[in-house]
Length: 591
Image 1 (tube, one colour):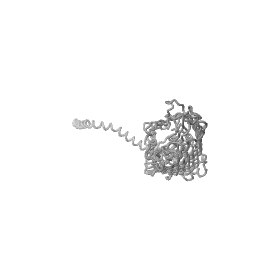
Image 2: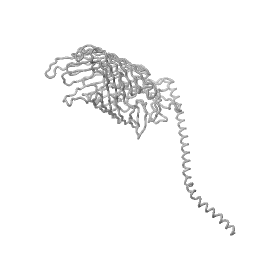
Image 3: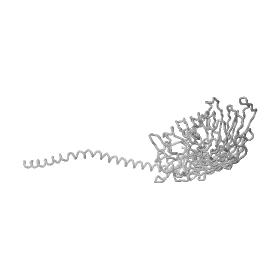
Image 4: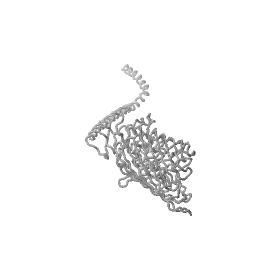
C-alpha cells in the first residue's frame, strides 16, 4: 500500500506542477470564450437581418408589380379627365445600371394607355425621400405637374444624370428653378424637380445644383442660400450715319450677389448689384404666404421688381434675347423697374392677379433732395384658358397709373440695339409729366418645343401746365409699342414658361454638357415697333433681332444676337432718321 500510495504521490506531483504551469495560459482562453461567442452570435443576427430585409424587399417589389398591373387595367378601362389627379407607378429592376422602383403622381395629365409615367416625384425604395406628398396640398396653385425624371434619384444619390424627357408645357418640370424675381415661397420652389446632387450634414439637406449649397431642413419648412448672377456682354455696332453710334465695347450687364431664406410661410430676399462700378440695392423684400378663399396669396413689403407685361416681368438673366422687347423698355413708369412699397398676389388654377403700390426704388435720392416719391399703382393678370400635353395658351393684361412729382423736364432713353450701346437710342425729350395711364395686352403660346409671344402697350401722358414761373399750357402725348417674337428648342426641351406667374424662368436642359451632352440649343426671332412721334420732342423706330442661345446647363448659357434698328428722333444729340446694326454676345451664369 505504501508502494502504491508512493506511486500515486509521485504521479500527483508532476500533475500539480503541470497545472501550475498551464494556469496562466488557461485564464485568457477562458476569458476569450464569451467574446468569441458574442461575435459569433452577432454574425448570426446580421445574417438573419439581411435575409429578412431581402425577403421584405422582394415582397415590396411583388406588390408594386401587382399594383402596376391593376393601374394599367384601370387606365385602359377608364379615361381620366384632364384635371383629375392620376396615380402612376412603374417598377424597374434593381440591378446595376437600371432604374430604381418608384411611384409618381401627376396632377395635370393622364398617362397614355400602355405608356409609363414620364417622371417620378416620390421614391419608395433604396433612397429616403421623405413622406409622400399630395400635389393638392402644395401652396402652388398650378396643377400642371411633371415631377423629376427616373434618373434623378433624390437625396444622397451621386450617380450621373442621364438624358431627361421633356415635360408638359407649363408644368413644374418645364423649368429648373423659380424666376429670380419671385419669392422663394414654401411649396413653390420645392415643387420644381431637382436634378443636382443632394447630401445630408448635421440634420440639414444640402442641395448643390448650382455650385453653391442651399441649406434646407428635411421637412422643407426652412431654407437658406446664397444667390446671384453674372452677365458679361460684348457688342459691335456699325452702319449708323452718326459716327459716335458705331462703337464696340464690353459691358457687365449684371453682377449681383445676395441671399434668400424661408421660414415656413415667411420668405425674404436681399440682393445687391455691382455693375458699372456702382453698388445699388435691387431686391430687398419680405413675403408672407397664406391662403385666402382656398387660393394661395402673397403679401410683400420692400423693394421689388415690377410685375408688368410678359417680357417686362422677366429678370435680366432669363430673357430670350439680350434685352427685353420695346413694350417692356418703352411703356415704363418714371420710377423705373423697381419700386419700394407693397405687393399683393393671388394665384388660382392657371391664373394669377397682382397689384402693387410703390414709390421710387430704394436707391432714389428723394430724401437727400427733400422730394416726394413718384407714386405708381399697378396691376397684372394672366390666364391659361387651354392646355394639353403638348400645347398651352396664355393671355394676359396689365396696366399702371402714376402720379409724378414736379420737375422741369422729362426725358426717356430707349435702347434700340443693346445694352452695350447707349448712343443708338430712341429719345423722348419733352415737357414735365404730371401723370400717365398705361396698359397692355399679351398673348403667348407653346406647341411642343416651339413658342410665340405677342405684346402691345400704350401710355397716355398728361404734361404739367406749369413749373415754377414757366407756363407750358395744356398738352398730352401718347407712346405705344408692339412686339412679336418666336423661338424653337432644337434639342427637344420644353419652352421655359413659368405658369404660376406667366413669365420666363430658367429652362430644364435635358442633356447638359457637364454630363457629356450637347446642352440645349434655341433659335429665336423678334420684331419690335415704337411710336411716340406725335408728342412734343417725341420719337419713333423699329427693330428686328435674330438670336441663338446655347444652354450648357440649367444655370449657364451663351447668347448670340444680331439686331438691325431704325430710329428717328425729334430732339437730342442725334436728330433725324438713321439705321444701325449690332452683333451682341453674352456669357451668363446664375447661382
